[in-house]
Image: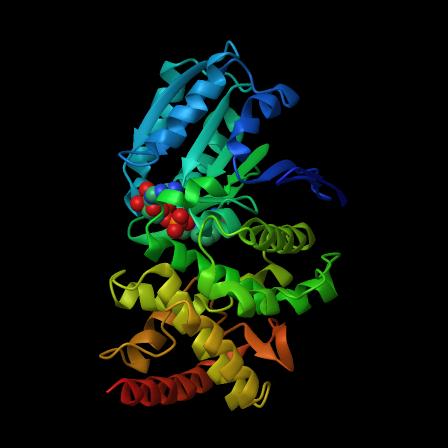
Length: 391
Ligand SMILES: NC(=O)c1ccc[n+]([C@@H]2O[C@H](COP(=O)([O-])OP(=O)(O)OC[C@H]3O[C@@H](n4cnc5c(N)ncnc54)[C@H](O)[C@@H]3O)[C@@H](O)[C@H]2O)c1
């Protein structure tokens, strides 16, 4: 794997090439969007661009992108798709394909996706499938998409009620992470993204020990403990924190692109989190569900003697510092969750590889299969304790 990283002013320019010959250029920082015209000159972006964005949001950002492209003799067409998760459907996929067809797109032409993870997921899938693959540029505009969804090449749509059932791996040529775009993001969405950021801080030592990712002068966990309460979109520390998360994700994806081993560690808090989203009919946000999922992973790690109470307390304090929940919601029982967990595509017979902290905060165990009975038992205890604690 070859990595080339240079700092340019406030932005980080990261050229990442893995053993799979994936070459993604990532530009991060305040006002990074201004670099789009220069970046387009550096790749073969064709002479047509389809800009895909959610309807009724990101109006100024989109205007800025169109303005930036205006002088480039590139024909730009805007397709507004349904906002949020509902855009990840076969209907919207067909609408994007139809638009590309009507505009006579060639393989050299480019889709630019601007929005949260829902848009980068469906636009990425459309780009990967039309003519067996056209160029893709993503401009993630939620914190979650900037640290996670738009990084790492997974694309997907939902199908017949199943989340991300259809998708593939396809890498954007350019990813622009402009933290100024977060200015308009509702605070609950920002906090949801912070759950993913916290997750990376619980994985940092495992990732650095198994890849060529290097921990900075201060571990992400300590950086967050010192700053998380003041971490708004314009905090000077935010670009550096996002860069650490992106570098971790790329290091993991470079080592295990298809999630056969190490990449599973990125699911910390997500196995139970997805079950919680499902059982609450998405009343819990993704970040809230992952936060409770991480709290359960900490609880289970203590129950198995993998970490001590002090580390659990330290980790829960960080999660709670941003207002994320760490207790099970009332009315949700262990049996409801276990039923959903064992319908998950990631189960292996009557066991699941749950990601659990071990030894020290920052390290996780991601290989061990945990049997259904053990999950049922510890989950029942977790639901009981925490329901009582909230009464
Ligand atoms: N591909 C992957 O590896 C991966 C990883 C994690 C999550 N995902 C997917 O990402 C999606 C969740 O992403 P998300 O949390 O970004 O949700 P989202 O894309 O639904 O965005 C959340 C909301 O924020 C709005 N929004 C986006 N940017 C904004 C801004 N700057 N200002 C104001 N509003 C803005 C959106 O229009 C939407 O209403 C899910 O579909 C999930 O499956 C994919």
